[in-house]
Image (cartoon, rainbow, N blue to C red; front, top):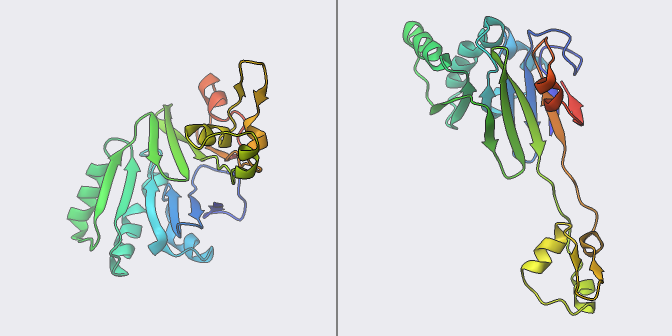
Length: 223
């Protein structure tokens, strides 16, 4: 996953009028967080193809975060996009999109799906999980990369006469087992090095409290 600040040359947020693009290299998809004014121009400068955007997450209804949204949706229609697009936003954003479409007399040539943000799990993917938290009239997000477990050492399991079954999977995930005689099977010794995943916290609120501190606890990347 590559994180791109589409409205600045720096990764970290110096101001709140900003859009963040998450480039999922393995999926060739872009997840866009907020769509500020001039977002398309900045994406072009960052050499990001807007047709690769598959999800747009809007954290609040402030005009700074949605001013470029209608223009982006129209541009996607002009590119003859066929791939569906999912938009996640607070309650009321769907009415804004409907009215904008009505008065601009725009017809989208692709399927557009709207999802209302709530606290909890937002996006469930094979590799990524996105969680949202509501505070101070806006949402904060956590993006977690799912842990990956490497190849299981089958030869070592056979040396201990372990039968093929669910036990293999649990050992591969790092579980430990204690035998009646006190001997311990350490799951980490039956698998190669594992990738424990990464945590990225996207915190846009200017006011920090206990919940905010819990959200940003031990992230690999903090925005």
